[in-house]
Length: 186
Image (cartoon, rainbow, N blue to C red; front, top):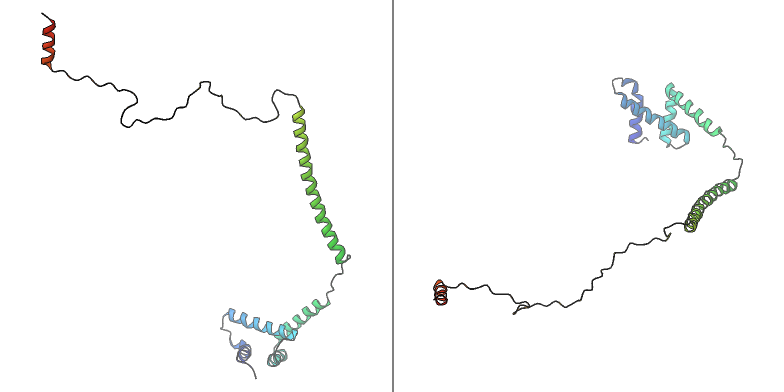
């Protein structure tokens, strides 16, 4: 007994010649389904009903027969391919890989070591060379003030000022000025 999907696929395949008006995407889908079923048949991955369906197609449809023979040749070609034998064992190959990794590490170490030695040589030579400037870096210093300042605490006057503030002269009335000038002038 066929399942619903298998019966539909069989019906679509049998009626494919009558479906000339059907668009190409549906035909491509049917061809894809037929190809997958043929491939599964070759691999032995089909159910009994699917196997009967493929055998029926092979007996009646030359296009399916052609696809089947092409798939069979392709499968036999894959099976006849020999796996190339390596000239080296896997242990020898892995040892060579690790040797190259170690060589790269040692080259990097040599490069860094050489740079450090070069820096030391340049530093040593620069201290030996005669010159007016000292090779030791020095910081600039600000000149020290020569005036001595005495530090006194800050005083704040609340009620009485620390320094006497002179009062502004008061305005003298004119009568007083006239009287004083008449007394002095006889």
